[in-house]
Image 1 (cartoon, rainbow, N blue to C red):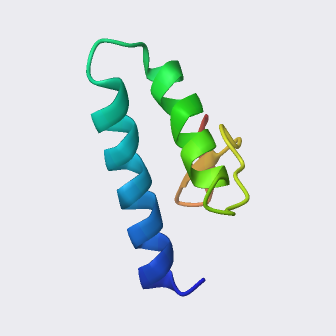
Image 2 (image 1 turned 180 degrees about the vertical axis):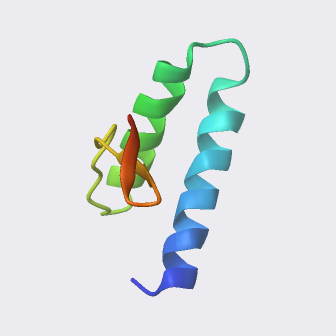
Length: 63
């Protein structure tokens, strides 16, 4: 998928989740719904991937 296509797929899936679920749920509900929407588009999803944040080559956070 070209970057523009991928970006469009992510944005469209995000709007679908927002429009279908509406407001008021926990973030985890929207995350799982977005994973479903993106997976149904044939995208491989890795959620909550660990990330080390570096500042001047020193790890300052793990998320």
